[in-house]
Length: 209
Image 1 (cartoon, one colour):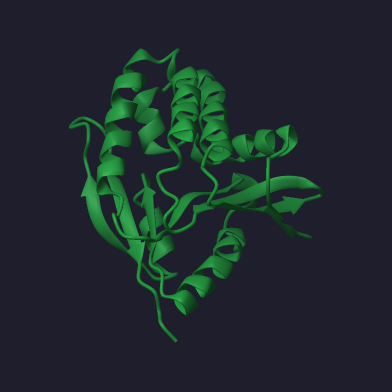
Image 2 (tube, rainbow, N blue to C red; image 1 turned 120 degrees about the vertical axis):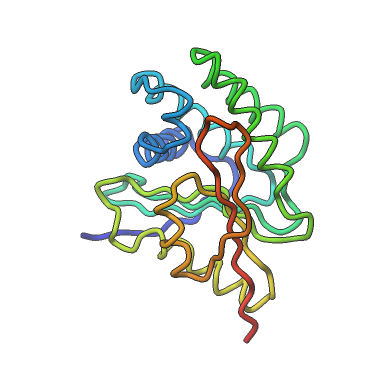
Protein backbone atom coordinates (compact mmCIF):
# COMPACT_ATOMS: atom_id res chain seq x y z
CA UNK A 1 0.00 0.00 0.00
CA UNK A 2 1.10 3.54 -0.66
CA UNK A 3 1.08 5.85 2.36
CA UNK A 4 1.94 9.54 2.55
CA UNK A 5 2.78 11.57 5.66
CA UNK A 6 1.39 15.08 5.96
CA UNK A 7 2.27 17.64 8.63
CA UNK A 8 -0.74 19.84 9.28
CA UNK A 9 -0.07 23.48 10.05
CA UNK A 10 -2.33 26.39 10.84
CA UNK A 11 -6.10 26.05 11.03
CA UNK A 12 -7.33 22.55 10.30
CA UNK A 13 -9.87 22.07 7.53
CA UNK A 14 -13.29 20.61 8.28
CA UNK A 15 -12.39 17.60 6.16
CA UNK A 16 -9.19 16.92 8.10
CA UNK A 17 -10.95 17.36 11.45
CA UNK A 18 -13.76 15.02 10.39
CA UNK A 19 -11.28 12.38 9.23
CA UNK A 20 -9.20 12.67 12.42
CA UNK A 21 -12.39 12.32 14.47
CA UNK A 22 -13.33 9.20 12.51
CA UNK A 23 -9.88 7.65 13.01
CA UNK A 24 -10.05 8.29 16.77
CA UNK A 25 -13.59 6.90 16.95
CA UNK A 26 -12.67 3.66 15.20
CA UNK A 27 -9.41 3.27 17.13
CA UNK A 28 -10.97 3.82 20.56
CA UNK A 29 -14.48 2.41 20.19
CA UNK A 30 -13.40 -0.63 22.25
CA UNK A 31 -11.28 1.34 24.72
CA UNK A 32 -11.96 0.19 28.33
CA UNK A 33 -12.41 3.77 29.51
CA UNK A 34 -15.06 4.67 26.95
CA UNK A 35 -16.84 1.34 27.43
CA UNK A 36 -16.93 2.15 31.14
CA UNK A 37 -18.57 5.48 30.36
CA UNK A 38 -21.15 3.81 28.11
CA UNK A 39 -21.72 0.42 26.49
CA UNK A 40 -24.06 2.03 23.98
CA UNK A 41 -22.15 1.84 20.69
CA UNK A 42 -24.43 4.36 18.99
CA UNK A 43 -23.71 6.99 21.63
CA UNK A 44 -19.98 6.29 21.50
CA UNK A 45 -19.93 6.57 17.71
CA UNK A 46 -21.61 9.95 18.05
CA UNK A 47 -19.56 11.22 21.00
CA UNK A 48 -16.00 10.14 20.26
CA UNK A 49 -15.58 12.16 17.02
CA UNK A 50 -17.00 15.24 18.76
CA UNK A 51 -14.65 14.86 21.71
CA UNK A 52 -11.53 14.35 19.63
CA UNK A 53 -12.43 17.05 17.11
CA UNK A 54 -12.58 19.61 19.91
CA UNK A 55 -9.53 18.19 21.65
CA UNK A 56 -7.35 18.45 18.53
CA UNK A 57 -8.79 21.71 17.21
CA UNK A 58 -8.05 23.50 20.48
CA UNK A 59 -4.85 21.74 21.52
CA UNK A 60 -3.14 25.13 21.55
CA UNK A 61 -0.58 27.13 19.62
CA UNK A 62 2.21 24.65 20.37
CA UNK A 63 0.49 21.73 18.69
CA UNK A 64 2.20 19.54 16.11
CA UNK A 65 -0.07 17.26 14.10
CA UNK A 66 1.08 14.64 11.64
CA UNK A 67 -1.15 12.30 9.70
CA UNK A 68 -0.79 9.33 7.39
CA UNK A 69 -3.01 9.31 4.31
CA UNK A 70 -4.01 6.47 2.05
CA UNK A 71 -5.64 7.46 -1.22
CA UNK A 72 -6.02 10.97 0.16
CA UNK A 73 -7.86 9.94 3.34
CA UNK A 74 -6.39 10.23 6.85
CA UNK A 75 -5.89 6.78 8.38
CA UNK A 76 -3.53 7.61 11.27
CA UNK A 77 -2.79 10.68 13.39
CA UNK A 78 -0.29 11.82 15.99
CA UNK A 79 -0.89 15.05 17.90
CA UNK A 80 1.72 16.58 20.16
CA UNK A 81 1.99 19.59 22.46
CA UNK A 82 5.45 21.13 22.39
CA UNK A 83 7.35 21.82 25.63
CA UNK A 84 5.87 24.67 27.62
CA UNK A 85 2.55 24.69 25.71
CA UNK A 86 0.47 22.37 27.91
CA UNK A 87 -2.09 23.13 29.11
CA UNK A 88 -3.27 25.27 26.18
CA UNK A 89 -4.47 28.84 26.70
CA UNK A 90 -7.58 29.25 28.87
CA UNK A 91 -9.78 30.08 25.88
CA UNK A 92 -8.76 26.85 24.15
CA UNK A 93 -9.30 24.87 27.35
CA UNK A 94 -12.83 26.24 27.64
CA UNK A 95 -13.59 25.28 24.03
CA UNK A 96 -12.20 21.79 24.61
CA UNK A 97 -14.50 21.44 27.63
CA UNK A 98 -17.50 22.61 25.62
CA UNK A 99 -16.83 19.98 22.95
CA UNK A 100 -16.40 17.33 25.66
CA UNK A 101 -19.66 18.42 27.30
CA UNK A 102 -21.46 18.23 23.96
CA UNK A 103 -20.02 14.77 23.34
CA UNK A 104 -20.92 13.42 26.78
CA UNK A 105 -24.27 15.16 27.28
CA UNK A 106 -26.37 12.08 26.28
CA UNK A 107 -24.40 10.03 28.86
CA UNK A 108 -25.00 11.81 32.21
CA UNK A 109 -22.71 9.62 34.33
CA UNK A 110 -19.92 10.17 31.82
CA UNK A 111 -19.91 13.89 32.60
CA UNK A 112 -19.10 13.11 36.24
CA UNK A 113 -16.66 10.25 35.70
CA UNK A 114 -15.00 11.87 32.71
CA UNK A 115 -14.32 15.03 34.69
CA UNK A 116 -12.64 13.02 37.44
CA UNK A 117 -10.36 11.33 34.93
CA UNK A 118 -9.44 14.60 33.25
CA UNK A 119 -8.70 16.22 36.61
CA UNK A 120 -6.46 13.33 37.64
CA UNK A 121 -4.63 13.50 34.31
CA UNK A 122 -3.91 17.19 34.72
CA UNK A 123 -2.61 16.69 38.27
CA UNK A 124 -0.29 13.91 37.09
CA UNK A 125 1.06 15.84 34.10
CA UNK A 126 4.76 16.76 34.53
CA UNK A 127 5.36 20.29 35.73
CA UNK A 128 8.65 20.56 33.84
CA UNK A 129 8.81 21.06 30.10
CA UNK A 130 8.24 17.86 28.11
CA UNK A 131 6.83 16.89 24.76
CA UNK A 132 3.30 15.58 25.27
CA UNK A 133 1.93 12.90 22.97
CA UNK A 134 -1.70 13.92 23.28
CA UNK A 135 -3.10 11.51 20.68
CA UNK A 136 -1.84 8.57 18.65
CA UNK A 137 -4.53 6.72 16.70
CA UNK A 138 -4.52 4.39 13.71
CA UNK A 139 -7.61 3.10 11.93
CA UNK A 140 -8.07 -0.60 12.84
CA UNK A 141 -7.74 -1.76 9.22
CA UNK A 142 -4.23 -0.27 9.08
CA UNK A 143 -2.91 -1.21 12.51
CA UNK A 144 0.22 -3.34 12.95
CA UNK A 145 1.80 -1.88 9.83
CA UNK A 146 4.21 0.47 11.60
CA UNK A 147 2.22 3.65 10.96
CA UNK A 148 2.16 4.77 14.59
CA UNK A 149 5.92 4.40 14.92
CA UNK A 150 6.34 6.15 11.57
CA UNK A 151 4.50 9.15 12.98
CA UNK A 152 6.42 9.14 16.27
CA UNK A 153 9.96 8.72 14.93
CA UNK A 154 10.66 12.36 13.92
CA UNK A 155 9.69 13.68 17.36
CA UNK A 156 11.54 10.86 19.16
CA UNK A 157 14.71 11.71 17.23
CA UNK A 158 14.30 15.44 17.84
CA UNK A 159 13.78 14.89 21.58
CA UNK A 160 16.93 12.76 21.77
CA UNK A 161 18.93 15.52 20.10
CA UNK A 162 17.45 18.36 22.17
CA UNK A 163 17.25 16.52 25.50
CA UNK A 164 13.49 16.55 26.02
CA UNK A 165 11.51 13.79 27.70
CA UNK A 166 8.17 12.68 26.23
CA UNK A 167 5.01 12.04 28.25
CA UNK A 168 1.74 10.28 27.44
CA UNK A 169 -1.31 8.58 28.95
CA UNK A 170 -2.96 5.37 27.82
CA UNK A 171 -6.10 3.54 28.93
CA UNK A 172 -5.23 0.20 27.28
CA UNK A 173 -2.94 -2.16 29.12
CA UNK A 174 -1.90 -3.83 25.85
CA UNK A 175 -0.51 -0.48 24.69
CA UNK A 176 2.17 -0.58 27.38
CA UNK A 177 4.30 -3.12 25.51
CA UNK A 178 3.89 -1.12 22.28
CA UNK A 179 5.22 2.07 23.86
CA UNK A 180 7.96 0.23 25.77
CA UNK A 181 9.42 -0.82 22.42
CA UNK A 182 10.21 2.82 21.60
CA UNK A 183 11.59 3.64 25.03
CA UNK A 184 8.63 4.60 27.21
CA UNK A 185 8.33 3.38 30.80
CA UNK A 186 5.31 3.44 33.09
CA UNK A 187 5.46 6.31 35.57
CA UNK A 188 2.12 6.00 37.40
CA UNK A 189 -1.22 4.21 37.45
CA UNK A 190 -4.21 6.48 37.98
CA UNK A 191 -7.54 5.25 39.34
CA UNK A 192 -9.75 8.36 39.52
CA UNK A 193 -12.98 6.32 39.80
CA UNK A 194 -12.80 3.20 42.01
CA UNK A 195 -15.12 1.17 39.77
CA UNK A 196 -13.51 2.41 36.58
CA UNK A 197 -10.52 1.14 34.58
CA UNK A 198 -7.00 2.34 35.41
CA UNK A 199 -5.11 4.86 33.33
CA UNK A 200 -1.35 4.57 32.86
CA UNK A 201 1.05 7.46 32.46
CA UNK A 202 4.31 6.80 30.62
CA UNK A 203 7.51 8.70 30.07
CA UNK A 204 10.37 8.38 27.62
CA UNK A 205 13.67 9.80 28.79
CA UNK A 206 15.79 11.63 26.24
CA UNK A 207 18.64 9.56 24.85
CA UNK A 208 21.36 12.18 24.60
CA UNK A 209 23.77 11.56 21.74
